[in-house]
Length: 255
Image 1 (tube, rainbow, N blue to C red):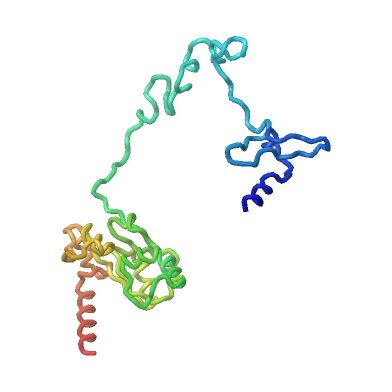
Image 2 (image 1 turned 180 degrees about the horizontal axis):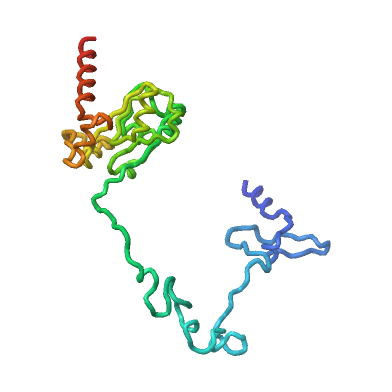
């Protein structure tokens, strides 16, 4: 085995320019490889890599003393060779002269949006089971949404509502009027359910509560109570929704 490997290592191979420095040319003009090609003896082809300018190495180089920067001034200094972006020579820059408009609401609870056409796409691909109740956990597990983006809930929107043909039973935090109409037109039902941060974490990551009691569903705060008690929004606390759920429980118990 060693002899075979030794023979292969000494086979005559036409070297590339990158290994020409390891080759010697015989009388017939053929190249015999002296050293086998390895990672530690590879080199660029001649002219492939240009040498950088060596500055400040004497006047004979042409780039000595001031190194081509001239005498003094802003561009002769080390570090940044020009002013920072937005600098206007010392006067107050435009972005400081104009007044601020608006504000950042630290109490805002932006919802992650989901369109009904994308929901139908995942149903068609078989990644969402339309025969089961679709919750926000279902949407995360199938890859429609990510846990890191669902911080305050999910809002269902009506983009591509004509594409929704599967009757689905879905529970989200909020839904637009067009999305509600699209779901019910296809023969499905929709319910808006409030989750606080703890309840949403328990829904999306139930494994975090193994061996612990699951937190109960929190009551909406006063500012949001009107939304979840409104049947037009399909709030889960509305009298119509609660009546429908009570009838379903009675029917399932009698069956």
